[in-house]
Image 1 (tube, rainbow, N blue to C red):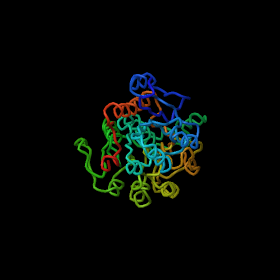
Image 2: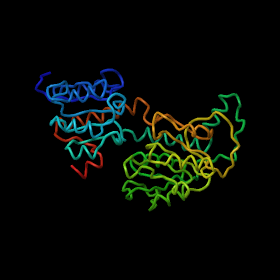
Image 3: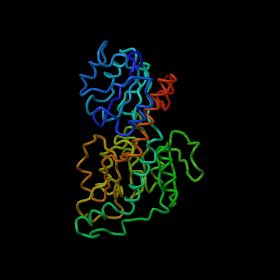
Image 4: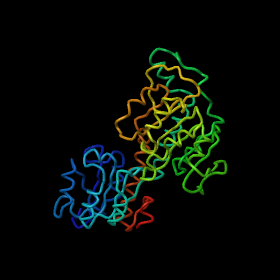
Length: 362
């Protein structure tokens, strides 16, 4: 391809030098439109490559995945400023719904647009949350561990389990993932209530809006978190919100670990306020009272890949290692959507799926 073509950087590759699933789509999208260059083995090399005349000279757009942070770190102020200093980088196409690894406000200030992949992750993340809801209510994860340990239900008490039908699910954040989960659980049916900053125009009539997080917590048998991680959502569910929940409640988190105050959550588990937090782990049998916070269902943690060892002390918790979109169908869809945003920027001068902070600042 001609060197006169614009250049794009594919950043955050799981397999050396290539995309994981969307190989052919990348060739089709950018053939004759842009030259593709690959990213660096470390942060220093990446920053050096952005200098005039170096390997990334002329880059206009970047495709990134969170795996890039393993080598070059998050896209913080240092990296954003270095990208801005090139004078050419104008678009970052992030592969993922959550984009907390990118300083989007700094990007907006420097005139760099950021897109993500909403919708592409909805089904996979919602079905992960559904698994956690069911496993918490029915104690399935704990039961499986009892079988694997040769104990065949020893220590399990049906008095600590519930049917899904008729329970109240509270959804914190009725975006694409929360709405998909609402439709999935309505099949049982569960009663569905939700809180978002504004009433959702897409909410079906059976999905009830409540006007505060505290009221959502008070009425929910299961609270499921689906808000993005921003400064204003860190510890959005804290001590006050957890203590407002019914005794015997369940908390499910497939959003981001820092959305909930982990220490407050563990205290509620330890002193018997919360029934269950879903986290997928079980190695022992506890004789827990029905009025306790029975468990939590977690797919995300504040300091991944580290997991607070205290969470492992509660065998009724269901713990997953951030499995939300770990399937080839969703990951291909995410790659294609991120690449499409970058392609549209190159071809039309404007991509799609701008993150919310960008819609008001650019």
